[in-house]
Image (cartoon, rainbow, N blue to C red; front, side, top):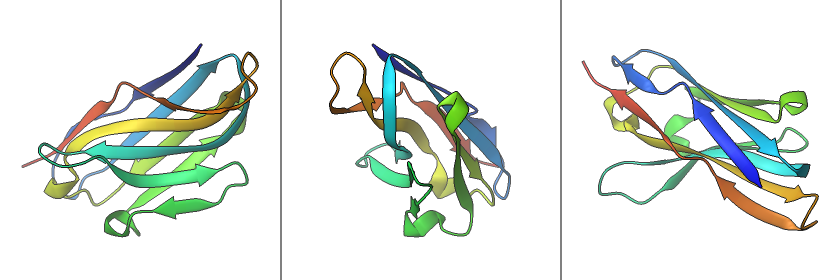
Length: 121
């Protein structure tokens, strides 16, 4: 059983900052990649940022230069530092992990429950 627990969402004014955290726990053998997706009302879920096991990062064009993804391997935790937030960043943010568990020994995809980020004055 794997759990992804997110934290750090909330209400912030345009231009403000938030930091999201996502901790993976359970019978984890290895983590291939972790990332953040978001879904705004009436829109499809989209990739925001991802980080691979070697530290390679990938960002959506809309957040490049404003958001930074990082990870703490010892804690199986991924972070998303969000600066210069805009109203269009308002969405539910979901943590995603591509990992291998001891019980199955094959890659599977896991999702967190989501955390609301609202950017509004």
